[in-house]
Image (cartoon, rainbow over all chains, first blue to last red; front, side):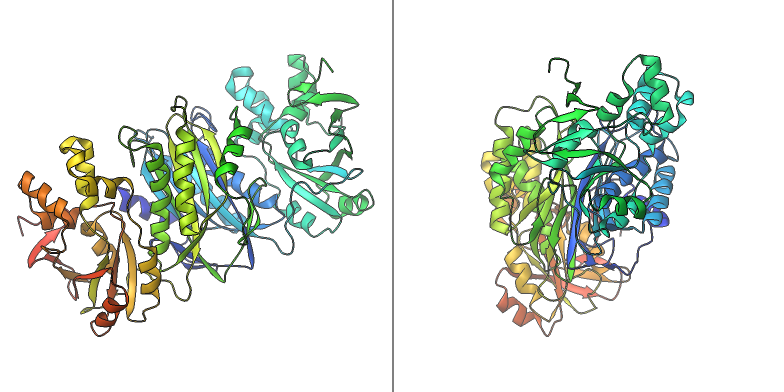
Length: 315
Length: 315
């Protein structure tokens, strides 16, 4: 990397992120970082690119720093694991406003500290477009919660909201007044994470699987179940956030369908045996039942067949 | 990620990269990959972006796939470590030629197989520009070879060539006939790796440090030494590749200075005690002495003071 100000940029990063940590045997500044490992490690990488994953017209520098880290923390949480460290690769265009990186690093380092994450290393490059690439790793206390483990009759549950971020995105993209939808806008810009619930769920033996809902229930429920299985879902009306109800009323669309289609909420979707469900619900207050696994590869929403596109009007 | 053909793209990847491996407990397709860890792991991430790190006008799809992986393998080797696995994040623009990804994955998977690397996971995104982001991890048999460990009097040595890739880049960018400089061009497009030498060097107790020379000796020797130390270097004439000699003769410039400035060769720069050097040289045939560490922060090339810009004409 031959950024003119590479050294000063690295010094800026050092001002926000501690360089040493008991997890890190050799930190930033060498060819590799060296980390102290548990027996198994879970690893994830995510791109976060301007005009694909975010727009600078409504994402503040802090929002970009927060969300690019948050989406990876959510992947770690979705394994029932605790995040340990991350690498940060930055694609840096010309012409960013004064103070952009200070605000970006402040928000990112606040979230990193809250999640117990250490910045181990990364790369910087000039680029025509602004982009981030975060690689994160974490450790599960015991087992890892996977997809494809649910069985017919299992309860499907959700930790967190669904549908809010979709309304937030629609409003931010010009479909309404952001000030009228503060929760929905916040859900899109700075999604709430469910790290605590994830670790609690991993400790419940009746929980058979977990996944983060980044692309919406419509796309992610089939991925969670795997081939040959379906689900009966009931998403409303009491589980639907007020702003989603209000937005859908104004638009004359189905709120339950919006909750089903909505993406980027980073809620956690899980499955538990029917027998274990009462205990799971009591142990982890933030989770609520949204349906049940079926032995046929078919998703039904309040009894009506749905596809990835919403209600199946030809079905 | 909402790429129209995401599923078929993932299926294409599966055709080139095995999905299971003893190192991988849970492979591609979940929120995270889960890997079986040694006690310590070294980790590196590198961006590889169009028009910053490569040009499609002279990099074939296979060259891009090869080099984006190779630069990370070199970082692992530079720790004296053996690569184990990698994550691949792809930024995918519209309008790539038919067969681009097949050629790209063929070259990348050939190199991955040769290096013993498994593809654990990653991310796909549409993008305005073509770009790759590879995160790689590896394991050292015993210790890790770091920077900043050399002492005054230690021998500095190199595994691999320096200066060839710089000539290759100049020729490819329009400064000459690529057909007249096949080795130099190849050094830029598909740098030769030094994994075997790295592991051998890690096994030599007299070797005190190692680093990969990605930005050229001029920038990387000071980084390798750290503050307060300098070096007396002798880079020529017998250690200089014939194509570098010929190119510099044609251009009327100093071949030794070109070798000193040249970047992207991915040679390995190391240090060993003077007492251990004869044994190191015998044990690892590919290495050659290029100088000695000095107690003053000053780099001299054949006795003349140099800076990051080459010979210091004002010194």
